[in-house]
Amino acid sequence: KLLEFAAQNFLIQKRYKEAEAVLRRRIELGSLTPEIWARFGDVLDAQKKTGEATAAYEKASALAPDSVTLRYALGALFWKAIRYDEAEKVFLEILKREPNEPRASFNLGDIYLTRGEAEKAVPFLETAMKAFPDEFDTRFALGRAFLAVGNTEKAVEELQTAVKINPNIAEGFYHLGRALQRAGRSDEAKQATEKAKELQKLKLESESLENRKAL
Image (cartoon, rainbow, N blue to C red; front, side):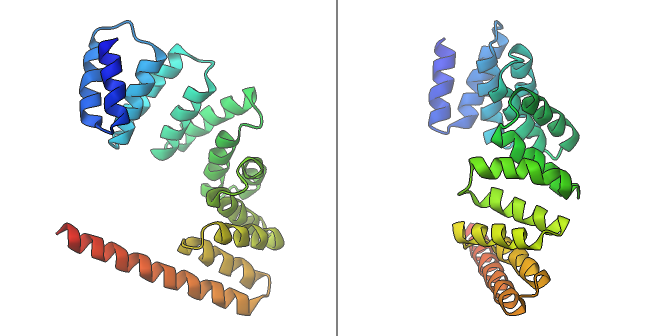
């Protein structure tokens, strides 16, 4: 219990290496719960040790197979590691239990969109958008999916909403420009494309400055 308490405190303080060391010692002692494996997975994921984090969450999920939270975390790690087939399987399992679970719906839609299966992506992304209407990622993904299936009007609508939510992302304006061009709104498309170029230039300049500071 003391080891678990110490690990939790280290995790809260973002002292991930120390939390990992304590949890490794705790794991050696046995009698492990899903919560211990999940915490270990979180500590590893925070250090970008995605493979080990995934293995930890697989153990957590095996001990608590009915936990949607643990299953989602496992699926998200598969998704992060671009292990899309495994992620798809996990998210579909979640949606069999909870058909409108928005996080699984978003990630599943994103997988289908990445694969070029936009028609399959749209209904899942629409479910996610209803739950998270004010998030850039959901609106942006749905807009791209509508554009891919040829629903230009809906694509413009979603992408315009996306860039209002976050006007600092070049990709949002780039895809909005594509949608507007396809809709025959050339002047607006040009403005959106120019904005995308401006934001991309600012991003590259900022990254260059950060790299010089690091040196």
